[in-house]
Length: 417
Image (tube, rainbow, N blue to C red; front, top):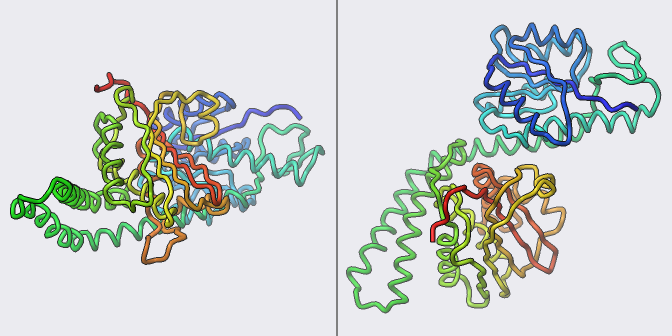
């Protein structure tokens, strides 16, 4: 069978957005595309009447009709239930996404969250579904679609979307739970601040009222004060996370944060857990990050490691510089070729089975008792690191322990000594 260049249609009235999609796809070194562009729903339907594209990127709001109306027209015109359409929304309205999928769309993306990797992955999922359908059901014989028979069709519209539907259902479920989280967080933020305020005040007053405490107790009070302040910030972070807001990013030297995490874990974790560190003293690259968010990420990972070692073990915290080449980037959906600072949190605990590894980043998924965890920790870790342009890799073996690697893009500024 001849190699086919996928035909893509961008149906979006925003020129800037269309240029962004084109730039993302031009950066794909593994595939080339034949790209068409339409500014209105009428133009999009006209293109489809001439020859249906392999993938359609469809903006929900077009000048003459909305995306759901176009989906309805496509279903009527071609008599298809499953359409190779990626619905694009500007506000991340999950209700629109649900309606789009029920109307036959294969995927949806929120414009503000769309990256080159997420766009390529969505397109790849549709193209692979087509390829799998052809191999499993049709074989090497001539194919009939939309009443046209060709030996080597230029584009194919019928897809097997079972796998994509399953993935998108999980995405929608995650989005709905996060929306619920935002509602809950908004309601309890005031009460949480009322709880944290007296704790913070007492932590600040005790050193003044009890000045003769030894150095270790003074240090513990300082940790209490610092973490009470962070608690207040974390309430804001949960709200920002649920609402999709970004934190304040500044050039940050990771080794200072790692040293702080080391001190907290050594002072608060059980003595049966040995804390080992491998933190370069001078040559770690800078990153552009929100320090409170990264503190939250690292503490979540360290607490999970602690909980995985109830009988004791070794917790290792390390940082290193790494260049992610094309082969490395190709193995990770969120990765780009370039320099990264890699933070590794390892434990010698119970480990995670392969089945659970596929679910650990889902919101509210947890293997702990409800009194011990909410299941939000790793979901927040994933969301924060992704918002920083990074990604997370996990290695684990049951009975041998786990290793979480956090990749953060290096900031191209001179390293602070």
